[in-house]
Image (cartoon, rainbow, N blue to C red; front, side, top):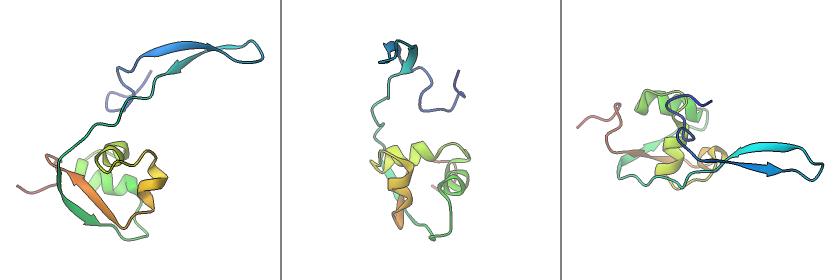
Length: 95
């Protein structure tokens, strides 16, 4: 159902009945994963989070890893920041 690198891979699902009687499967939102930061990247206002994820994580859909590392619940919350913490061990980080 989800890509292997999705934050929802392996998440539990449950069934919900909506007010109109429709039954849907829902994915439980996982708790953010904490990460040690290697440093901060001063993101230009014009640079999208997916491009930052490619640069440092080699994963265009890895923006959620940046969100988790920065304790940002949504990409929009992280996108408003000028400094983005980069998790330790990211492929784009030099030792």
